[in-house]
Amino acid sequence: MAELVRDALRNMSRYIAGADVLICGASYRQDVGDTRYSGSEMVVRKLSQMGAEVRVHDPYVDHWYEFEDQDEDLAHSWKRFFRNQDNLSSIEMLKDLPKAVSGVEALVLAVPHSSYLNLNPDDVVKWAGNPIAIIDCFGILSDDKIRRYFELGCEVKGLGRGHIMRIKKELLNEKK
Image (cartoon, rainbow, N blue to C red; front, side, top):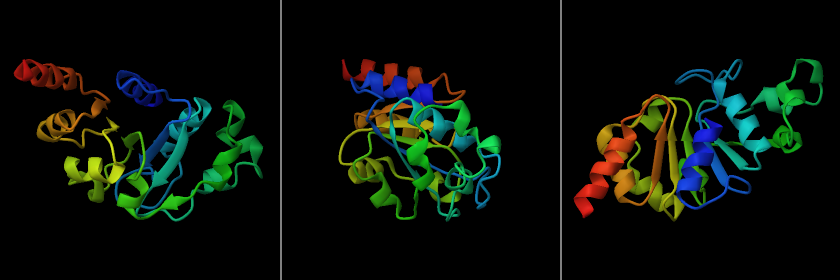
C-alpha cells in the first residue's frame, strides 16, 4: 500500500518524502475500535520509513497502543524492523474528518468504516484544498466515485483494482 501511495504521488509529480498522508482507519476491521493485528500499522510504519508525514483518522479508535507503547516493549514492537519510527509514539487519533483531510497530499482508505463508504469526492477535494492521491485498500470506491476523483484532478490507486487505469484512460479519451 505504501508503494501505491508513492506511485500515485509520483504520477502527480510529487514526492513521498515529506508528503502529508492521511490514513483513514486504524482498527483491524470495519466499525470496531481494536487495533491489534491491524494491517494499517504496517502501512503507517512503511510510509514513515519512506519519509511521509502520517496522520491517522479513525472514528472508533482513541489510542493506538502499538505505537504509543513501542519504546517500552521493543522486543514485541514492529518498530525494530523499520527506520524513522520515533515520531510515531506520539501519533494522534484524529476525529474530525474534514479537518484531518485539510492539506493532505494523499488519503489512504485503509479500513472500510461505514463513515468512509459514502464520502463525496467533491467534499474530499474541497477539504484537502487541492487534488490529492486516493488509495483504496478495500474496494470502497465505486467506479463512479473513481471517475469523479479523476475528473477533479486526483490520482486513484487501488489494491486489486486493475480496472482503475481503464477508467482513467476512458476519461482521457473523452477529453480529446
